Length: 359
Ligand SMILES: Cc1cc2nc3c(=O)[nH]c(=O)nc-3n(C[C@H](O)[C@H](O)[C@H](O)COP(=O)(O)O)c2cc1C
Image (cartoon, protein in one colour):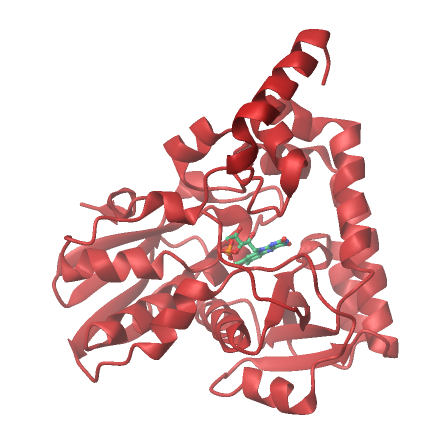
């Protein structure tokens, strides 16, 4: 708060808004349920996770049973993801979500990756055929979210580890927090975050994807919102009303981001590492699909998943992890995981499906 007027306005807002402390969340943007089956599938599929919640997927609906999946160049993250690796992973999660959403409508979706390179315009083709109706996974898809706060310091049980990776084709490794490897990962996560919070292009790019005010959230329905970033209570109310893009560039914001990372690293159970043989589009698509499957399998078990991608984005740490961990292939995900007392409701917002569809 910079001025006395701002202080008074804040108190005024507090009194007026205490009942709506969390700001706009997913529930405020329910899609029109009267749309076509394609639109219903798309609406559900868009609940897939994506880096900075950019929702980079585009869909050309060629007919009721054939879609072409591409990506929106304005939704790439060149500063942290110059090779489009994370973008293709997000598309992989999206296509898996299409599969789950199609099952809810009695359709089986066959996904074929077309792209040979991570920058090709057309990434995949989806063909729908009649199949059996299955609703369970779509219910879990609606409940799934990233959970950054409240992880308990208890390693995942062997049984849960096994069950999380049923039906997964990527190679997945578990390292409990207290293990030697766990500590190596923790150190790399902390240090790579320190490096990234000092990298101007990465900080500016992040600032471009934070939606501080309710107005911005309502207009864009993408990016990271205060509730999505798990800024709680009065702090949430404060930033929504007084923060803007410039605040995300300040030293104090960078300090508070590092404080949040330290807090996150003070309590969790197990690191989950997903690898791929190489970073060709088809392998990244599989890694994305598997990331979503693990997230969904964790919902009823009250297992929180939190990707901490900075060690893969900062090359020196990617090499360090590759050299010091007993893993095969290239690391695609570093996921902090742990049990939570209560799995929280999803809050991150999604765009109207009409914005995804391309003519
Ligand atoms: C490839 C990829 C990388 C991600 N990296 C991070 C990360 O480093 N830190 C983080 O807090 N969330 C990360 N996320 C999670 C997204 O921010 C999250 O999926 C998005 O904000 C939507 O929220 P939701 O998954 O809870 O719906 C990542 C997600 C994907 C798909």
